[in-house]
Length: 99
Image 1 (tube, rainbow, N blue to C red):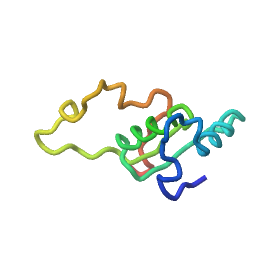
Image 2: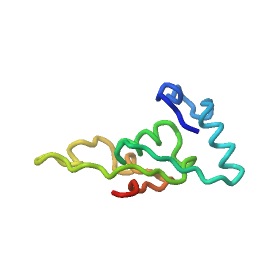
Image 3: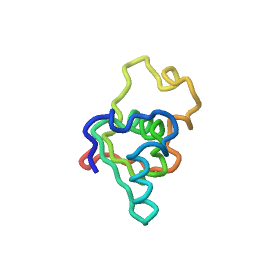
């Protein structure tokens, strides 16, 4: 399944009310491994996966490696929440082939 715009799967509350979530969950219940690929970097992709309730539905997420931060900027300065908030709890995050 390929989604054309984020408007098709934007969170409006409980992800179980979302048609994409329900479709993927039905496939997963039947034993299908769900793999996703994106051209967005890992940090942003992981955040979106969690935001849309797909961590645990998606088994593996392939995305490009994150870029380096500018000199003088650290991850600790950018993040306001604990590290585990930004990390996937179930899905595996893998680099894109060729990275």
